[in-house]
Image: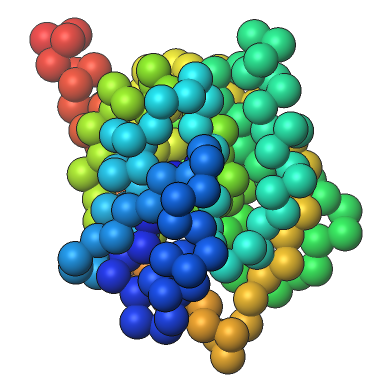
Length: 204
């Protein structure tokens, strides 16, 4: 397990040093500058040595017990990538962000031909050889649409499995906002347009 502290200021760094330094099978990385989620993911992907990579946000909105569900289709050679869908879980409680996520997922499906129910999910299990060879250019929460568009571009097989989700409130430190929604739309359109232009050049 690779834990990356993005130069936090809430005491996380001290907890990591006291509780996890020197533990077997745990690698701690402390960044000198706070640069956002995607920056941390890039480091984690580079350092990972396993055959499958799962991304886990530290706030535990998602349940690590679902890891086995996520990796099973890959192990059984039925998928290259597995998304954990909150919306396939019938116990999911609707919120304002539900409709934003549904819109972004629908837009992604429309432009890629995918049939996802939850593109914005944090839980993405990906074969290491795939994600290590995808250049990630975004810096913030745009990681989710960017990686999805690039996975679709390369025609990797994506499966979805239902997962548990307990969303945090803003009073609990949730950071994502409406600006991130517009950033996601821009990212989806940007990479789908790039693919369309490449196809046009090939035909010409």
